[in-house]
Length: 227
Ligand code: CA
Figure 1 (cartoon, helix red, strand yellow):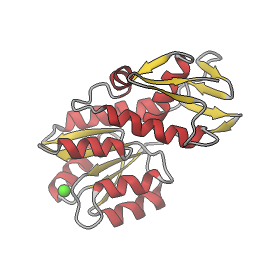
Figure 2: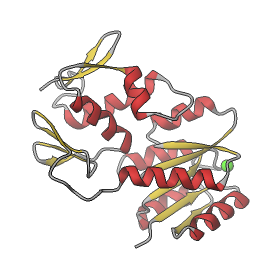
Figure 3: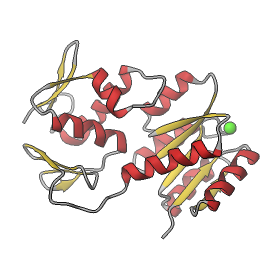
């Protein structure tokens, strides 16, 4: 079955050329020209990936991203214009997985789409690839995480941060290392992005997220996972 990509973009020429290129690559393509329509389509069609323009009339890209993230882990690639550095950081903070700056080549965009999909797709399982720490279990091959046997709903970035913390359990992991590993290739990186993702992870795995007992803050360094 081909993967379904939803494009939310108000500039018709861009939407058309992205849709055309993706369809030619064998993707099933849906398009929306504003945020409201995009959210409705995302809800109804459950796409495998979203390409989301930052500047949309009405409900903007960041709000679309934020709204989706309340219920969905769908991979999101944001489209931004040059000079929107700050918005890009905010984009990653609200849960986008990657972004592409306009103007971009179709080849570049399709490469990003494939890379993001590859990271989220379950691969053939092998008995290895399982990391454990206390009640947490990370299946690195399948990109699945469990707490007390219950599946955790994590975004791609949250999963990667947790995977690294579990792999280095008991050790302080620096913000820089997390940025380098998880946000590799993202040109404009801000340590606050790490902090925001840690906060979300705590909400998902801590009994009391405001008094974390699993993911501890190591002042001046970063974070440490303890059992
Ligand atoms: Ca736009």
